[in-house]
Image 1 (cartoon, one colour):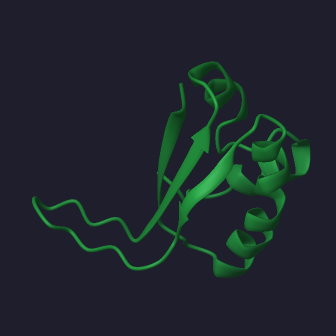
Image 2: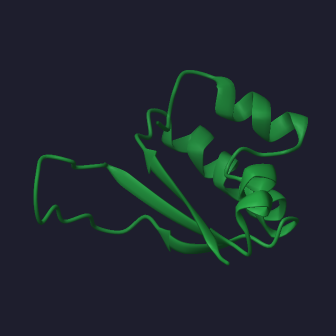
Length: 88
């Protein structure tokens, strides 16, 4: 059964985020992940939740999502992602 990972992103450093975005797809693909939604406009229909950027990733299973979620699995992207927060 498919599993989905939802990521709310607040980009603080656009240049660093652009570099990070190029590093993430290979680590997702390694575990069968694919982007379903990546950016675009967000419209809140109910409540007060209003993410600045929204990413939805699909994996073939929960196990694969846990192993390959949106955290990069190589040292360079991990260092890039660990600087001051740009996702929540």
